[in-house]
Structures are given as structure tokens and as C-alpha cells.
Image (cartoon, rainbow, N blue to C red; front, side):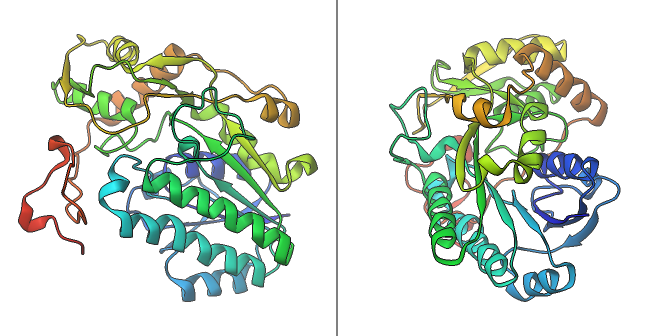
Length: 338
């Protein structure tokens, strides 16, 4: 039986990957600080440890105790747009925490390190995004993800740590934290509709994204350590068909059985069009399941309606307030780094 660690396993993607790993017979430890996840998300059968990947002593104890064969690193604060304004927080959580895990993995002989990166590493003007393209991230989140990718590459070359890197995009589905106002547009829309508020769209809504249901990516991430051809490779993973945010709003409102009400906000600095090519992933992992946007959003809507709305917390510890979208701004007295 394999011993595996899943960071962020109380979160959305992490809990689904953990579920897939348990189904594959892994002995599983979930590490999560519950800053964005919920203990109820953790699948039965996993051992839960509440803590942070920034706690090096905790990590050392876990790696000593459980002798992990595999590490699945999904813990991150994945608010791309907000990352411009919380640079230190972003790099501490998304880069330094990842380096702590890489160090522990090297020192304890982990067989393979699986990392969920992001298509944010590509930047703009590169669609469809392909793995061989030169990365040019345009936000601090993408920069951090790319740095971790490069650390894994050099750690393999220097120390022999095997890895698999996935670049998923716009993943949605059941268990997503719909109370997060800075990321996951489908969840934001659903939460707003549950509160009888209009769906808020930055700019004119013609931004194009391919939206991916979690059931189409979690199983491949979980079984990647068993696929020899996947070792030390980078893979785009997700849906192929892009939609505008305006089209998405139509689908979400229909799935919730509510009228489409939209409020357009001032445009923010973001990539206009982002979707990727998945030829490499299909070649190595085979053709994945492909959930249509309508079916996936409908399934998520049923889960959301059963669980109800969530309060949207404001991120108060901004490090930079200049040029922040007005809807994200907080009073100046709170807009200082922690």
C-alpha cells in the first residue's frame, strides 16, 4: 500500500484528489490549515492533520512518521487577480511553502511529487496554450507557480526527485468554496444569486475561458504517479471549449432556476482569452471524461442549493492598495500588510 500526502486536501480540488487516491488504495494523510477549505470536505478514510506548509517542524514530523511515497501538492491561495496586491502573502504561501515540501520530499526519499500549477504561467496572447510555449506570467500568482515548476525541474536534475506537473484551469464543481469573492467565478455567481444579488462581471464579459468540471481532472491527477511516461513532465489538463463570461452567466442562472441579473463592473487587469491544448495529456493518460458546461454547472448547482449561500470575507491584509478594483477595496486603515 502506498503512503501519500495531500496538501490542501480539505479544499475543493484537494478533497476530490484525496477521494480518488483512497479509491486507488492509498494510505492517506491530508494536511490543511482550513484557511480556504472545510473539514467536512475530507473524505472518510483519510487521516487529517490541521497545519500549514509554512510550518517546517510540522512537515519534518509528518515525513518522519509516515514515510510518504508520494506527495500531492494542491495547497495554494489561488486568487490570480488579487495576487498583484498581496505579493508577500502570495509568495510565502504559494512559493516558500512549496519549497518546504520539496526540501522534505528530497530529504525523505519521496518517489514522486505531483504539483498542481496553473495556466497562469503562460500569460496572454498564447492560445491555445501548449506546454512547449515559453511561459510569460502576468500576475504574481502565475510567477509563483512557474517558480515552483522550475524548482521541481532542478530538484529532479540535482537530487533525483521525480515529479508530475499539471496546469489545470477554471476548475469548478461540488465542494467549491462559493464564499470566496476573489476566485472561482462560477461559485461567485451562484453565491450572489442565492443572496438575490446580481452576478458581477468585470468589464464587458467577453473574456473567454474553458471551464472544467472537477470529475474530469481529479482522477488523472491521482493516478499520474502510476504512469511512467508522465514522470518529470508538464501537462495541461481541463476542458477544451472556451465560453465568454456572459455565456457562463446564462448557464449559471439557468442551472439555479433564477432570472439572469448581471452588473458590469470596471474592467480589471486580466488575460482576455485563456484556454489550453490537451493533446499531450490525452496521449499519455488517454481520453478523459468530458463533462459539458451545462451538465457540470447543473451538478454543482444542485450541491450549492442543498448547502446554501456562504458569507464572502474581505481580504483585509492588502499590501498594495493602488489600482485595486473598487469592489475589492477595503478601508485604508485595514489595507496594510499583516
